[in-house]
Length: 360
Image (cartoon, rainbow, N blue to C red; front, top):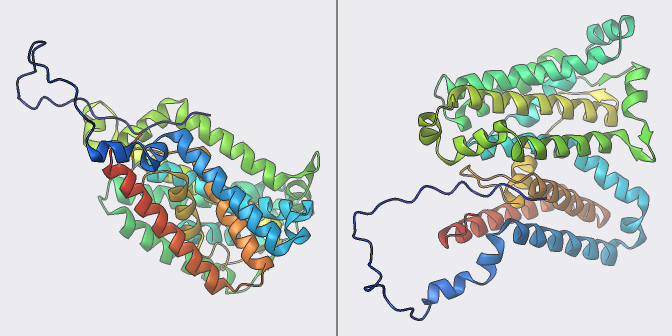
């Protein structure tokens, strides 16, 4: 599947006279820098090259897992475990791809997941769901996520707060509100039809994974085949140019955060089904994992370029890495150090490619 390249700026007239046919310089030797650009940087600057690199990285992790953990890693049960773990953070990462492509960032996704899971599993909500329909739990989680996203988007677009500050405030407020509602206790889900529906399988594939696949397909179509996606790329590439082109940048920015909030609510549903609980501790460090997967996948942190396929590979790489670490009894601290190193390496590689003119 093709992905949108970075929107190339229009050619700028430098004011110098264009060379005439007779005065055109003869072709000479290619400068050393251009020759270097034909190597790894040139390959990674192309969407297909980046995807091939991600596939090779994933295959390398698979080989490491098979060598170090053997059948425990290669079993079908472990593969489904990896995909189940990837489904929750994967849904959040798709929304994060849109926000970062649009030139923003969201540090509150983990807290929104926690608040959505707690709000949708309170005793009152579950009693109402048993009296009416279990989908009330789903609606509650999605509504809470959308509300948090709306607040984030309004503060950033209309309040002119920096995304880092606005979402950091939401990170603290949402986590605190979740703790107040849950009173720091785990809420057990007792609505069986809700658990039965999302805990079922389709042709042997868990519904959690099916939901993630559907979100990935929806995200790819939305980014690559719709006006909404083109406006997201334009706003992230150059907000002022997008405004002059007639795009309501503030409204579109708000919609991006609402979209991410809704996906956080959906991730909360998947996490609630997987654990059969709602808790204020859900979603810890999800912001780190989601941003890391998006950056590793090839989406520019500065905005203007996004790739859903790359994000999917980024999620799979991180989830597989975590699984390999867990099977080899490496502690969480070691995993965090490795993830941090991978994020730094990915950002440095992005900057190196960008400096060499590989923005496509």
